[in-house]
Length: 73
Image (cartoon, rainbow, N blue to C red; front, side, top):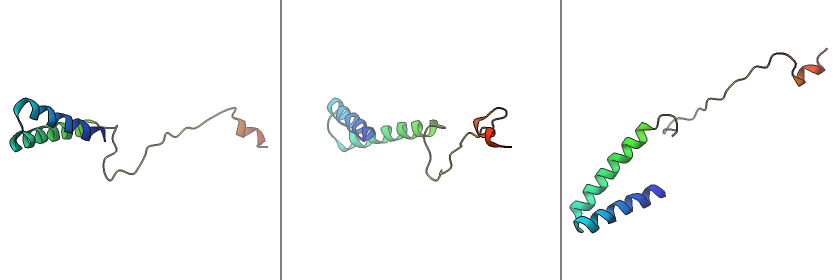
């Protein structure tokens, strides 16, 4: 929701500065879209891409005096 509000604010601001025309609206939407695409592609590990379902879970091995080891004979 926040990105849509930011895109709308960019379009309205550009229209206030350069005047209301379809060229200004289209040009600003194109520029904002390119910036959004660059931002999305530059986030390597923060955003899960479409089709990615797996999650890496850290595996830990405990050796030595561990509470579960006390019940063993």
